[in-house]
Image (spheres, rainbow, N blue to C red):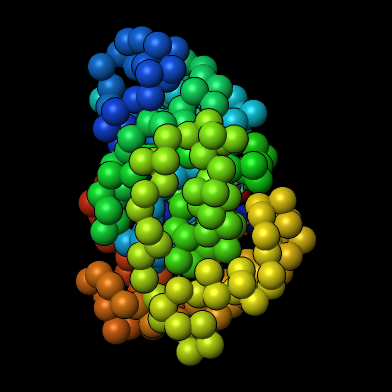
Length: 253
Ligand code: A2H
């Protein structure tokens, strides 16, 4: 990791239908506000390929008022950063409406902005860090080795992970083409590194580095408004378009 702040794009994924456990835990605490799961990403240009979203089952999340009509679900740590950065109003002030365990959010259906599959499910991921980003990770298995391997694990053992197989039904979507790995960079790199499960964290870290560099320096968009353009060109354009449509905002830490 480099020095200085990391610049993320915070993706706003509106809750379409809460899981029964989340519904019970939250009641009407959001006060009629629309609630969004907020995911921090370094790859906004891949959002066309979201197939689900991940939370950590051992992580505590909060629902925070963003303004009078919207609330954000993320970690308390992230909400504090958002408040200092002015993405939660009034600036510097956080109002926590509810607290909820990650395990209860699993199974919630959300709207994934810009995605080819506009509604996706929240699933558990073992390697979500409470100390990074918002604690919510949007999943793009075509381009993220971590996301692809976690989806693979969940599909193999749905009972073990306490999920409904219907929640992992969406297949990876080709978003970016790379000269070395083709239209599905993450699955190809996971195979190359012989990764077997999301517990192979060391190989996954290497795979992540390889896939990230290949996509960023050599990738071409296969989908969306900037189809045919290089990833380097498209990245900021997709980000700006999402922010303009109020589907995302800048987040740094
Ligand atoms: B990225 P860095 Cl397609 N715990 O978004 C674990 N991982 C987290 C996280 C957390 N709390 N918060 C964010 N992340 C993930 C897309 C993506 C990402 C693709 C390819 C690579 C990639 C879709 N998931 O990241 O440690 C998020 O996944 C590889 C760099 O700050 C976020 O971007 O460098 C990335 O890790 C941030 O990782």
